[in-house]
Length: 342
Image (cartoon, rainbow, N blue to C red; front, side, top):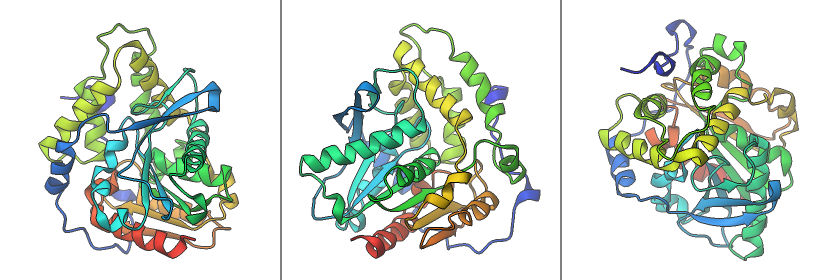
């Protein structure tokens, strides 16, 4: 049984809205689980960028080709670039674009000298990674740069579009919210981040010894709200190990704590959404228990200067939508990139 701070949240039925949905994917979660079960960590490469006095930015890619547009993939809270393992194996994507999963500050194998940073720092780091890879001749940003992000990755896509409007050709947020963790979002059926995360932050605010690992209670909390309580057991086993192995000892505690603080205390983006001038494809699942469809329907309307801002609802889609419904997500991504690549 989970402790109170890890109780699984579910959206109240009264906040659900009638919506038009895309048909659910025929690919089963068990099939996706087989791909993840075979992976090992890390499958990443690091590249040094100079933001914050120097960051070893970690990324994973199935291959880079400067003749193709590039799709940056941004993972969700305390996961890693392994979140997109299914996409790396999809020739329908890799034959048309570079897949470049860059792990956020505090996540995966990315390392920074500083203990304090924000989502804006990750967004700027990602832009510097793109610049560095272009200098190495591995990508050509003139072919088009797109950004897809899950949950926290969704608001990274927006930050990148704001920081580099001349470079970002389009953004694809999945299962996200662009507000801060506000009372309004909770009224619309989103989770209560301050209630769920404050005790975690408090518990991780004292120095730790070398034995520190996030326990299974924390991992199961994340897995339940992200992949779904009924996900395949191999998925649960993989991510329990992945999270525990990534946040080890005092260094791991500091990164996990700051990642959690950023999630709870981030700034909202509503006032800045009018400055997004690229196309937006927002994908959201009806089974998302963290951020609601109702909130997505409200926020997509705030991209008033985007030439094409669409919200597509995927029936039965979980919070980690590219995992639960890869066929629907990958198909929509291929169409979007194909339409707007230069």
